[in-house]
Amino acid sequence: MNWSDVLADPCLQDLPYKIELNQYGAIVMTPASNRHGHLQIEIGFLLKTQRPEGRTLSECSVDTPGGVKVADVAWLSESFVAQHRETTPYSKAPDLCIEILSPSNSRREMAEKTQLYFDQGAQEVWLCSEAGKLEFYTPAGQVDASPLFPEFPQAIK
Image 1 (tube, helix red, strand yellow):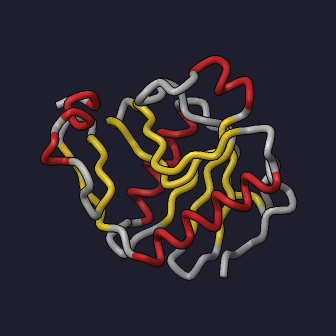
Image 2: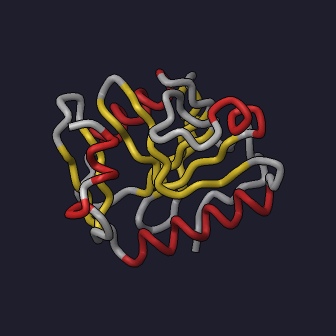
Image 3: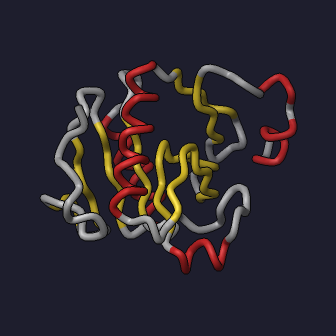
C-alpha cells in the first residue's frame, strides 16, 4: 500500500487514530486521546504565535525510508513551503517535526522516528509527553531549548 491509497480509501477516513505506513507499506495505527488533541492544538498555536512567517501543520505526512510517518505537529519555513507547497506526503521533512507521545509509543520507536525525520532533513524534532513536558532534539542530540523557537516553554499545561 502507498500513501495515495491510504488517502483514497473511504474506509480509512475519519478514524479516531493516526495512520502511518511502515517500510513494508503496512498500516500502523495509533489511537489518540483528547489530551493528545489538546497538546497538538496548544503547540500549534504557540508555534504560529511565535513564528507567524512560517506555516504550522497538524498531521504532517513525510515519506521516509521507514515508510510514511505523520508528525503530530510540524512547522514549515517559508522556503520549505515555496519549494514543497502542499505535496502529500512531503519527500523531505519540514524544519520542525513534533511527536506527542502515546502510552503505546516506546522510546526505541521514538528514537527511530526522530532519526528518520533528521535523515529527511528536519532541523529539529520535539517529543511531548502526555503530561506536556517537551524534549528538544537537533541532529547533534538533545538540547535544553529549541534553536528555532528559543522562547518556547519547556512544558504545555
